[in-house]
Length: 201
Image (cartoon, rainbow, N blue to C red; front, side):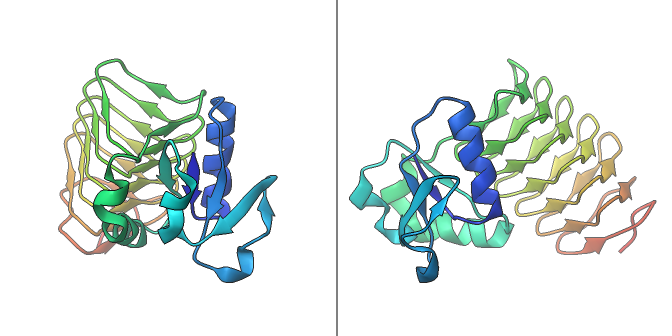
């Protein structure tokens, strides 16, 4: 496996893969000052666009910013399309009927309940819960300790902030930021920042 991004998020993904007994070649990162260094004992080998040189069995995009992660996946295009893999910590719980897309990361303590559908390149962070029948679109991020009740829809590239909560059957648009600790009790339109309890924008 190759991890694309050698920052803090990359460290967590490396730990997930190693905890799952998956061999990790190292990191790729576009910051030249990192090349030749080690992160968690794994080498930072070079630039992300050079991934084919290492013939990896799989790739994970370790970019915490949703728009930047989307841009990276689009930039690498068809050459990487079949290589994106799911990274799931052994302490994450995913229901048998849930669907989880390619390149998605499920961290320790994450819970995905029955008939939830998680898109591609989503981050379900430490201790986050996604209940029954939720739909999380591509490149979204459910941050540590955030909780989505049943039937919630989260749009592409949206961030559900640390400790935020969403009551059942609400829809949150694309490119939204839900602030840390916010409580969402109604539909949220695209491209707004919503904060507080109840969340306002």
